[in-house]
Length: 201
Image 1 (cartoon, one colour):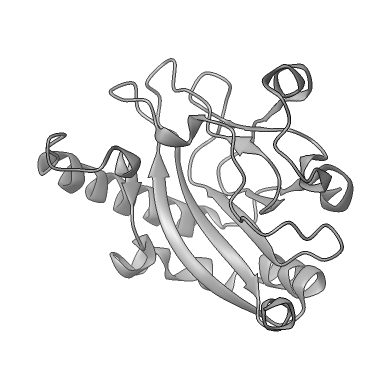
Image 2: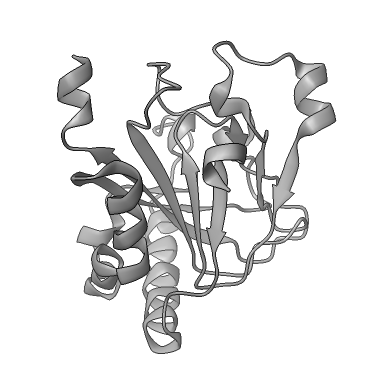
């Protein structure tokens, strides 16, 4: 469960028609991105990243109202706010900067979950095309675990297209490396607790 391991998967909650539309829109945006891509003029942290993708094509708008996702966010966080919908894709052309293990919030609050990460899978994710790695239970660790600990305990989570991966923003994770060049497109969103952040300020 997400409380124990720090992550969980909700299988195939995006409909086939909506998923197909998102795949086509994503491909078009990648083509535009790479046609104008100049590695000399772009921060390496932006490789494979399409910021606020939900604003770039209406095909992605249904992601703001996936009912099972909304219900889980409400259950875990209470009142919540969407933070962003950013498109990410792995490629054999470059190594995505998120392949290093990291957590997404600096504030350590094991007593209460302040934010939740969502990863909407637009393609099947596999070990070959860069599925995400996690360190189970690391959301409960105050400090970053050692490299030896990470290597011993890490697990790679593979999913079917249309599935959503939930994880506590404190959970250490890393993007996998795309070894075969097959599509691995996803959209990441952060859901913040509307009330809890105010309580901790």
